[in-house]
Length: 109
Image (cartoon, rainbow, N blue to C red; front, side):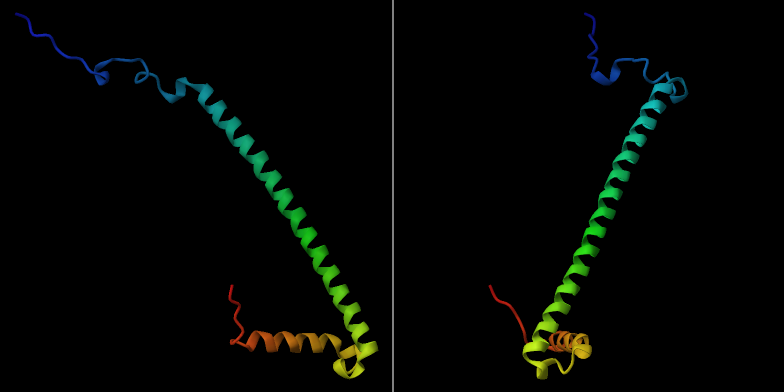
C-alpha cells in the first residue's frame, strides 16, 4: 500500500516568490499614483484650513467691533460705569481678569 501525502496550501509552489520588485515597475507607478492622490488631498485640506482661519479672524474682528459699539452705548447711558470711552477696553480687561481669578464659579447640568 502506498502512503498518500497530504498537501496543504503552503505546499503549493507559485511564481510570486521568484519575481523581484525590480521586475515589477507597475508597483512603483501605483505607489507614485497613490502618493500623488494623497498630496492633492492634503493640499485641499490645507486650503480649507487656511480659509477657516481667515473666517475665524474675520469673525473675531467683528466681535471686537461690536464690543466697542456696545461699550460706547453703555457709556452714553451710564458714563460712571466705564469712566470714559478711552478707558472702556481697560474696563473689559479688568472684568475678564476678575472672572479668570474667580475659581468658585461652576456650572452644573
